[in-house]
Image (cartoon, rainbow, N blue to C red; front, side, top):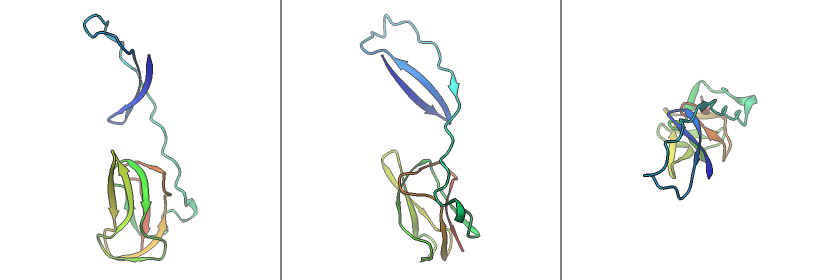
Amino acid sequence: MKNYTITVNGNVYDVTVEEGASTASAAPAPKAAPKAAPKAAPAAAASSAGAGSVRIEAGAAGKVFKIVAGVGDSIKAGDAVVIIEAMKMEIPVVAPKDGTIASIDCAVGDPCAAGQLLATLN
């Protein structure tokens, strides 16, 4: 048997799968009870969190793959600031308007939730 943790629509389930069992003779497995979802990791730069007036947030849950812009960089609307990886796809998180990067609130490899603050812009 193998144990897996599966997340469906934000609910986390622990399931056990028996290998080699025939589906015709197998008894239905009991339903898995949801457990509390893991808490998001704290921002890497907590001291500068929210330094700018414009929030740049993750559009999808995933993992921070690359940080493209740094604090103090001037960027244009639509420029990539952070790239997140979700389901083996690289998704750019772009600046909503022109400005200067005030803070980077994540680090490469950090998990992120949809809507999580990744950077701020002035």
